[in-house]
Length: 455
Image 1 (cartoon, rainbow, N blue to C red):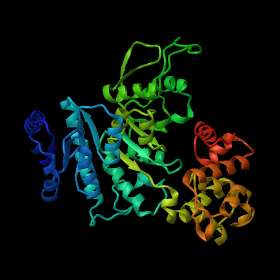
Image 2 (image 1 turned 60 degrees about the horizontal axis):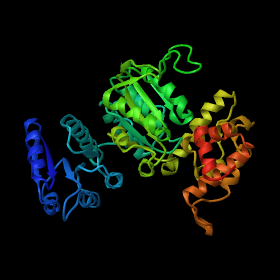
Image 3 (image 1 turned 180 degrees about the vertical axis):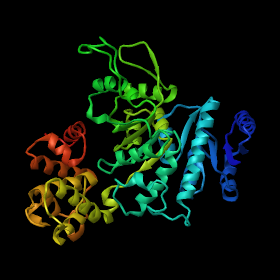
Image 4 (image 1 turned 60 degrees about the vertical axis):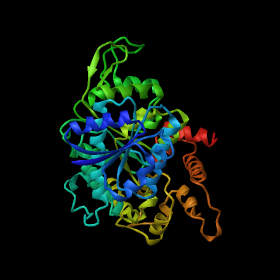
């Protein structure tokens, strides 16, 4: 049985939750009405989950969340509140809360959250187990990760996490910059899951105008708009029984977010221009390169959709956080493109490898791949030399972004702005080619051009 601590200053809520959870026969419950006692209890007793009311006198829910985070208490927090407050929700998320439930609490929803939280407990404790060997050989489904080239210990830990998350049917949110391999991880999740014999459908939400995305996502009825000459199935129906991967989820408009939330909650949707209710059985894996906490704060992303998608989450490190992988990735790409272009390039020169290892990669792995790709086309010898490297890369590589040798330290935004400017100069303003080099969608690139006033 799992141990749950419930903290609320309302005795009626405590009695209700105590009775309901005990009746399931699955949990041991401890209730606390005086929140000032919580810190001492957490010091002396072990729990799997803590249910915390946010609005309490003396010691608030945020105080407890901060204590759990700062003291690294081994417990999964779930917030309970009677107030719909965006600022409060964001504070709770940043303090490490697993989920956020509004009162009155729906019993079925509560049990779903607890089940997901308990899975999170198992994963968290397995990751921190010093006896657990982290290697490709220790993976049960190592074959499903063969496309992800790495020897980085943190990436191997992520593979083990992916294996554990794959066996559930929960939604998953993958965080990470463009070009870090989010779609490859999503494919691995699908291939390990019980849905592996059904379709895996990958969609880049940032590649569509919002009006077009709605039609492509949900499908449309014949005659629903000009040009709709026949009925069309959308991405949801294509992925029926399987997995739908939505990349750049942060680009979706609020109106489409509402419809997606309905799909996740009710497992049903309507085609555009149709009144027929269509049931769906699909697992949603979403990915984002945005800080969704900031998007929620700005009002451009729904908090309730965030919690629905973020039942389990995976963070993928940037290439700059796994620099030990640069040589093996560079050689891997060299082998692929040498074969593709019929070249006999067997190695990368020491000078080029040094430049590659010390470069800042705004486009991450995809940018490294594009650098090797274009260099392989130009190289005529058996060794990939400096003269074959793209001009923009050579110009950027001359300057260190680390602030060493007395150079000015720059923010990520400044580095990104300068890098996009160099890429646009390299492509002579060709935005499609620039977006390919950067490893982002054209829509995303245009948004960054406007943001940094590069037009």
